[in-house]
Image (tube, rainbow, N blue to C red; front, side):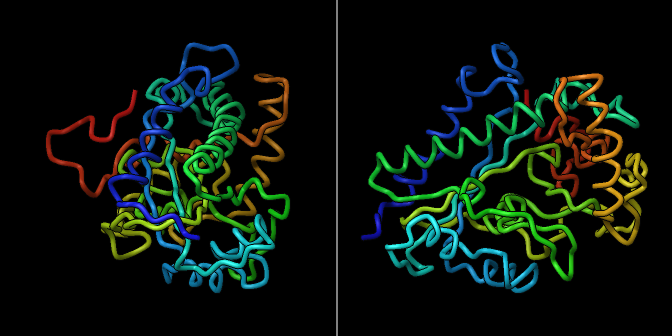
Length: 302
């Protein structure tokens, strides 16, 4: 059975639940016991399981390893066959706080400790949010799963794009109407590119979020006027150019430079923290293609 509710009912309940959960400092803290949040107010979007972009992504990224929503759901519930049009995908964007972004703007070769905490402890927050949304939906009579938490989730290599995995939170957010990609491969949303992303898939139906873009790089200034290369100039690994994002250079720098730095100088644990290209750039905290003349705080989060 597919749970069918009005768009304003179930989706609003999900939005209210996620927003409320994130507003609780016991859930959303920059580090355990801190009074400071890891992230600001979330953005939430939804897409239908049969959205043609999902099979497109599978064919484009890797037909042998990348999941469509029904494949991921099928792994979670192998004894319950499901059709794509019975599913909805919920995606959320967690914006880095103003404090974290301000600190990180000063970073040049190594990440700020605030950013490293948001990367390490903040992703723990994101993981718990995934689990919590699945539990909430169960209480609403909806069976769901978080693809990133499935035991079958794994890293893979795409013949076309190099490093990849079974499910991409950024690509899912793109399908769910939350943003488009930039030169650095980061997702530019209405609250900018300094974000973390999560998603769940549920057996339910309601109206999806309308995508307010037609191209996958529509909100990146570089792909509008070819002039903005700020993220490339910010990158300490020289991994971003007019040709795009060199994943090998990026990963090598993180694994050999920033991760050891975080372990030895910041948190005492090895964390793949960098994100220097996500701050001190025009798309840090809003969609720069919609910036109004005279406005300085569009998309700002506390």
